[in-house]
Structure formats: structure tokens, C-alpha cells
Image (cartoon, rainbow, N blue to C red):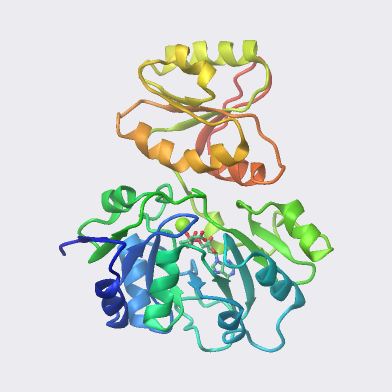
Length: 341
Ligand code: TXA
Ligand code: MG
């Protein structure tokens, strides 16, 4: 299949393709999505095929607003879903509710629930509006690879596997949406994202739980290996500079061609293959996936990331994504603890 790159200024070709049951990759404010008409099973089957995605991993359905949510929910709308949608839509938040039969089982990975999000990106919105249907869209990467934040990332993963990619520039957030399961009470944060747990709790006026090991309240997708570039990722999760220095010296012996993603002051340690991570958790969230892909292009023998874990705001999401990508963690001060997953 020949893949065509489309500009974001004229979406008529993409809208026609989606109406005809084709898949189209398009930008959203979080990451690029691979979309199809969410009410058309055959079209959505192509998403699973193009990504190599396991069929038990459900897709997120993209709607314009709360009316889209109302049209697919089974039974009474949970108050938590309504409050969150009113407060954070359009934006990087996905809610899970019990599903009526508008959205086929294939899209839902045979779950009784459905995940919904109203994106704020103008291209995504124009597509949903133009097609006149909700659009199912997981991240537009090959399964297991970092989510794409630029059209080139989609191109590198899916070229030849899908007919169209719309180039709408960089995704401003850079990490996938926060997912909250509102089909249970109290609600559960299934995937941390740009909208932090504290922000959700203050909007709801109640606790938002984290999934516990062994509970059924999990996003099926979170069990798969994720977000990983080809080179092994090593996460230095430390505060003190002299401990970080020591860890870097040790790692450089083991991985002479390592690449480094870290605050600017560490550039001198690996000047030939360095990418600056910003200072705030928002900056790190924005740069992480793009950085993985950029550094991976130089074929390093490891990608080392220096970032001290925290669980505030988007920090929880960064720790989650980095934890899933990492093959090794260097954590306790002064000792290189080697954990292989
Ligand atoms: O920001 C985003 O959410 C991006 C953009 C394109 O909107 N989409 C995205 O989709 O990240 P994807 O497929 O890569 O991640 C969807 C996650 C998976 O972990 C999946 O298991 C979970 O959502 N999910 C979908 N439906 C669910 C359901 N009914 N119950 C629990 N988890 C669900
Ligand atoms: Mg994904």
C-alpha cells in the first residue's frame, strides 16, 4: 500500500476516506492517533491490523463533546464522567463508562465499557465533525513503540501499512491522555497523563484511586510492553549530582555508545549524543517520546535518562511511561540496582 502524506489545511480527502471505511493517521493535542469510523467494525479491524495490536486491547473513541458521551453510555450517566467531561473537555482526558451497543464489541476489546475522549486539536475536531461519526483512534504507532508526537514518527512506523497520514505539526502535550474509569465508584485512574490526579480529585471533590495489583480495574493496554525505543532504556532516578556522576561513569564503560536525555548541565558527560530534557515535568512529558525516537535514530547501545521520580501532577505520568520503557533502573543512591523486566 502507498501511504500519502496530507496537509492539515484541506481535510476533504481524509474525511472521504474515513467515510469510506479507511484508516487515517491524524494529530491530536496528546499524540497522533490512527482513526477510523468507530461505528464500523470492518474499518476498525484495519486499525488493529496496521498497528499489530492485540484484539483484547480496546480503542479510545473520539467525540466532539458531552453529547457524544451521552449517545454511547448505557443506563444513567455516572456523575463523575459528567463532571470530568464538563471540566476538561475538549482536552487530554479519557473517561470510561458502561457502553450501549452503538460502539461495536471489536472496538471495545469485548469489554462492557467504552473509553471516550473529546480532543481539542482542531484537525481532530474537523475530522469528527466532517465524518459525522465518532472516531476510534489509538496512538498511531506500531504496537510496543513509543507513541508518535510528529507525522514523521507515524511515517516511520506505519508507512506502507495505512493510506493516509495528516501532518499537523508537533503534538503539544506529547503524552497520551489521562484515563479515568468512571464505570466504578470511586473512580480509578487507569493511566496517568497531563491532567494530574490532584486536579481530578479537586474537580470531583472525591478520591480517585490508583489501580492496585490484582484488581480488575486496569486498562488492558497497560499490561503490554510499551513506549520502548529499540535501544535499551536505562533510567537514572536520583537526586544527588555526585551519585548521578558515578552512575554515568559506570554506564559509559558498559555502553560506550550510549545516548543521554537529561537536564542541560549533563551534556558535557555525553556531548556527542545528548538531548536536553526541560526542567519541569511538563517539559519532560513533552520531550520524552520524541527524544526516544530522535536518539534511537543514532543507533546508540543504550538510552540513559536522568530524571528524579515524583508523583505530582504530570510527574506521575512521566514516571509511568519511563518505568514501562526502562529495561534497567539505577535508583538507590550510589548503587546501581539492576532490574530487568
Ligand atoms: O491521548 C490519547 O488517549 C491517544 C490519542 C490518539 O487520543 N490515544 C491513545 O490510545 O493513547 P491507545 O489505544 O494507545 O491507548 C488506549 C488505552 C489502552 O491502554 C486501552 O487498554 C485503554 O485505553 N482502554 C480503552 N478502552 C478501555 C476500556 N473500555 N476499559 C479500560 N481501558 C480501556
Ligand atoms: Mg498506544
